[in-house]
Amino acid sequence: MTLISAVGQAQALDGREAGLQATYQALNKLGAVTPNLGIVIASNQYQPREVAAGVSSLTGDMPLIGFSAPAGLTGEGVHPHSVTLALLSGDLRAEVHWLPGYSQSGRDTGNRLLQLTANELQQRSLLFFADGFNGDAEQLCAALTGRSLPILGGLSSGDLNTGATYQIAGTQAGMGGLSAAILRGNVRVGVGRAHGWDPVGSQFRITRSRGFWLRTLNGRPASESYAQVFGYPAREWAFPPLSYLARLYPLGVEEGDQLVVRAPLRVEADGSFRMNAPVRDGADAYLLVGSRASCQEAARKAAREALLQLDDAKPVFALILVDVAWQMLLKSSPGAEVAAVQEIFGPEVPLAGGYTLGQIAPSSPLAAPTFLNQHIVVIAFGEDR
Picture 1: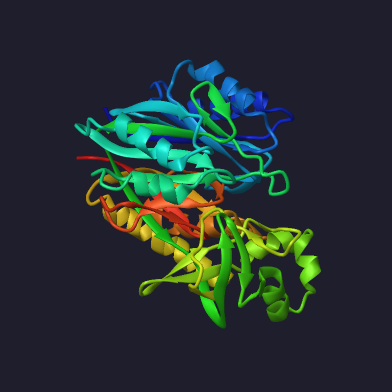
Picture 2: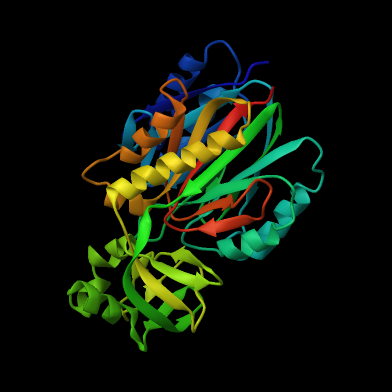
């Protein structure tokens, strides 16, 4: 059966109504066929169980996974306070799982996923979404190393003030968990990743970090180091908007011969940076700055890479996972990254996605999954010939 996809998007006062309307749109576009998988991106302002109930009221027990985001993405652009739903139908089988303990241990959750994917026969890929504020994504990726199938995903985002995000797996949903879909069947997955941030010359030494908190740069509170560069008083970095805009200015941390991008979630009252991945004491770090042009080119690069990995498979759908920093950077040109991806895929391929607090993708086909900040990840689904 031919692999096809459709995307619906809707806004409403409550999550159930928005989920129902988005599903109705997508099903109308899909036609008479039955969907085999749904991927939902819902506003963090909705209740997750209401969103799941709205979708399942029309799709029944269809496998469904999803995550919260401040805005959804489609080929038409950016959609705040909305539900976006992508449906796939054809020779595709999905097995959905809800793992509620991710925030307590990324390693244990990764080991559980290893057990679920122990029988690799006919498995084509593993797609998952996890909590963006709580849990260790690097531990999760380390536990999943060695699995010979593409492992892809993102970290859900939401209210930066409260740290509340959610994940959806079937009719189950909540905070602090991980939703996963094991994909099988006549489907090929290609993935591309890139970012549009470059070093600008300011160099720091990470002199003290504890867990997810980067305490000092060059021996002084992290906010003081940023205050010196940007000219705003250090105390102002602990309050909106600077406490959240700090994510626009991530650090490129030296690891071997490469710079790994690590971005703050927010600035704390004591001037430390709350990260969602630990950084190493003694490492050199460089201030990174992005631009609209470099991000648009990064989006094109990621899209081209995803298409290349499909080989001769025909693309039928693209899932776009974009760091929330892109939403901040492209505020004056909303949807610029989606338009760049659409340039490469063409207008006939449905797109859906959302803004995330981290992305997971391998550096090459079948390589170990890597936790990323500040990236765009494009996941192309194609029909294997």
